[in-house]
Image 1: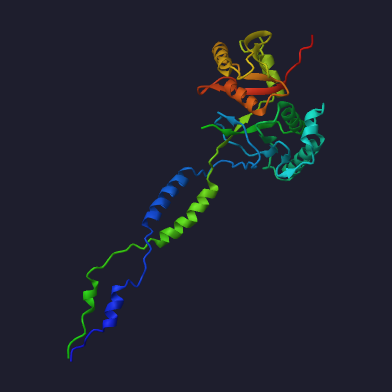
Image 2: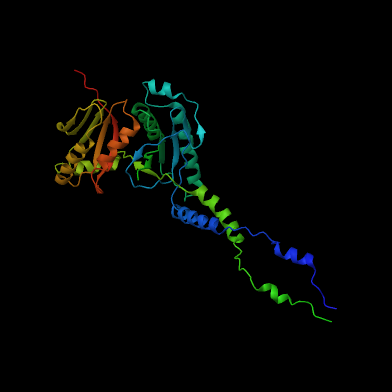
Length: 166
Length: 162
């Protein structure tokens, strides 16, 4: 007697048992994305983080940022290396004094700290380098007070952070 | 007794399917990483120049040379002017939109006459906005890739009282 293949089995064979997801086109897209992102990826240089409410001015400069103390000056806050200073910028803007006492106090403490480190570790050297991230709508009368105070505290290598124009 | 049908017959329409799922996993990991580290807005810096004691010595040494003069750009809401010592070289009083190109062309002429000169002072009114200061610094620092006066100092404008 011949062995007849079961009918049931035939029916099962017609139905695809495994569902294969076609991801080729998605991979094409991902490859393009990867190439684009790798092109815009920069592994070198100092990355300055800019707060969301701070709009830097645009400039044609080509100089890359260098490490230094970061001072952020937005429209309503003065932040030194991540610490918000208890100052009222409107009052500072109106005052006749060029010096901002709170900022000077904070900065001189930092300079002293650096000096203590360099006394122990000669490889650490206080360069007096600072980067000011200022909002583009800050008037000069406020800017000069901050730059002046930094200069008085010993930060004399001053640079201004800007967005580079294309 | 007949044999069981051969299993080989089933392999006639055999579709080769590349298994791309490992690539997919790789890309899923790589893309968020690169997106997080991507920099879409390049940040640069503009260096400020503070005169030091050594510069004062160099200035004394430069006395009598071509570069022994003071360059000052005055910026107020109503005026943009360039002075070489007491002599006004350029003045623009347009209220809206400063003539920075005119200033730059004057500075290019000056640079040709005294290539050694590098420092310039910006005398600013208190109400001038930061973006305007940077714009003026850009037009004073370089022109078409050639260096003009890169050592820029900022100063308060001296209010002339009559």
